[in-house]
Image (tube, rainbow, N blue to C red; front, side):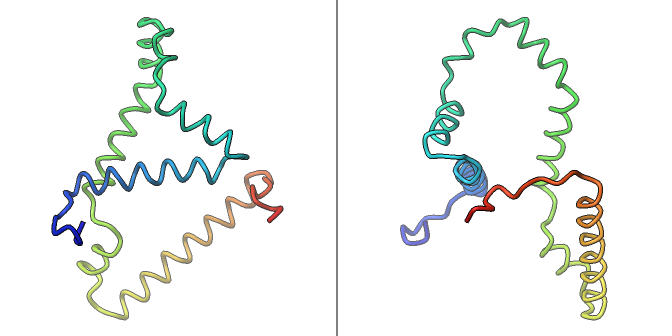
Length: 130
């Protein structure tokens, strides 16, 4: 966009990045290109929607209303909240405090990851053959 002498709006930059990640994630998780193609077509093909009745749709929406509300709240928070770099620049002005805080966060994350490995059952890494 800079080469064209234009500035992309924040919404469009976010929208394009979000969709790019969604599409590339499909290829990352797919077992083959044909299965990835099937998933991508399913993401944009609306033919199957016409066979669903309005009653079934409303029942499904009622059942997942709390999930939808939670998802919208989290989405709003992610879009409006400052990112980690902004938080560090604003609140962690002293270098010693910044190093201590980052060490503390790293220790907590490491603890949670080890706890996850202990509690959850073993699952094979998806690309173990490479």
